[in-house]
Length: 161
Image (tube, rainbow, N blue to C red):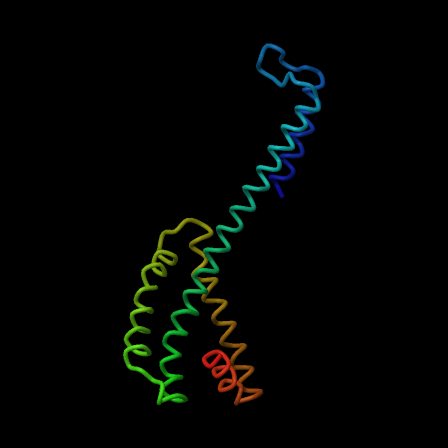
């Protein structure tokens, strides 16, 4: 909000000084008011675009932590699901060794996303992701309390289709 107020204040100041040809010796804005206004509008658009880029960079970093977590847990859970529900299709190499290698592979980017001494707000993301996981576990526990067979149904939908 502060940036928006500053930009609006700057715009009105620049528009008023340009119409009076302030500092004509090259130190001020000497173009027609319409050009100055357009220049300020371009600056405002670039500022908004910069904030948009920052938002998407930060949100994608947070989302990547959650995606890696889901991927790792899926690798581990699929092994147990196939062993229990499809023992004839279970392959120790595919569902054991490759799943563990997949989990080990994502530990490297996971470390760099959650390593200590990150800049703000990136240092908050591991804790925020932990909060999302805690909320998801509470939600899952509530659903299982209501309907104990829901775990089998969801597992079969995810794994079989």
